[in-house]
Each structure stands twice: as structure tokens, then as C-alpha cells.
Length: 203
Image 1 (tube, rainbow, N blue to C red):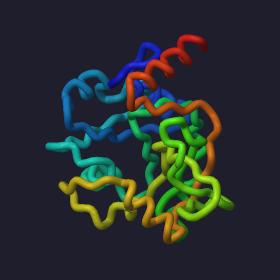
Image 2 (image 1 turned 90 degrees about the vertical axis):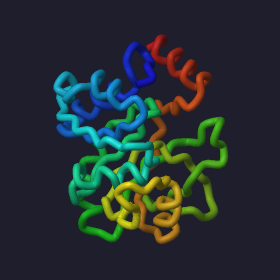
Image 3 (image 1 turned 30 degrees about the vertical axis):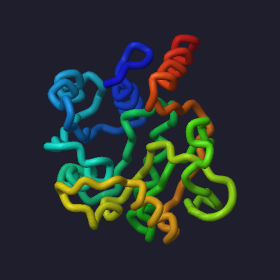
């Protein structure tokens, strides 16, 4: 619920998702869950139907996905981290789900040029395939289309990070991807949040 440009970061995402044609969203909540539920409601004001996946304690990203599997269903889904601001066109990912369903890939990651605080990057990208080898590296943007099979080995109440699963899938060449060079900012520190506020105020 951190605000930037006069609205919560997650509200920017919800508005862009609706504009891109998405109609349903599942939001993981744990710490201060009721504050989030009260602020966002059923999603009607954003043109979405929001369902909440309530975690008794924070389960991290892979654990949160596993906990929400019953709400997400069996088809690939769009995953967006709530602690970023981006102007990525989510509509561009609507066709990716079919290729994941029909092929051997577990997901499709959006990468960005490395920000100052993550100069080493996360993954390589060659011919649309995510890797973890030599060559230029880019940073995972916190945006992906993902098969539920990515977290098949994670229990419904298990705390588990997503990064090790992504690196393992990359080593098996089971991830597709693309590079986004537009506006993107992670707001993990007050300084980066201030940078975002400056950008939004100047638009």
C-alpha cells in the first residue's frame, strides 16, 4: 500500500491490468491484511474482481503462489510484484499463456536493464530463452506469466522463495522471456521511492 503519485503502488497495477483486458486478480495478504482488503475492496472501482489469498504468516513468493493455487486454477497466470512501479503493457503478455500451456516451458519472465542497486543482474536472455550462463545479464522485473507447475513441489502452507525455482528452471531452459526498456522502478528503499515520486511529479 506504499503510495506514489497520489495512489498506492498496487492501484497503478490494478488499473493497468484492467486497461489491458484482465478481469480477475488474486492478491496475497498477510501482514496488515485487513487494511489492504478495506482499501481495495472487491476491485469494482478498478474494473476487476479481486479475490484475496490470506496467509496466516508471510509465505514469500513461491509459498504465496502455492497457497493461492486453488484460486489461481490450472492455467498459466500473470504474476506482478506489488513493490514495483512500471509502465509495461500487460496486454502484451496475454498471448504467452497458450505457448506455456502447449509447450515445455514453466514461465515467461520480463527482464529490465540492471538498475544501480543490482548491477550484476539475474539472468541472461538469448533468442527469447532465459538462461543463467555467460553473456549480458538482466534483472527480473517482478513480472511473469507462470505455470502453476512452477511451484508443484511447494506445500500449501510452506514458506518458500521463488528465486531458486526460477534459477533451476532457467538452468533447464524452461523459461522464455523478453527485455523491457521502459519505465520500471523497484521501491525497496526510501531513496528509490523518492526517485519514483520525482518522476511521477514531473510527468
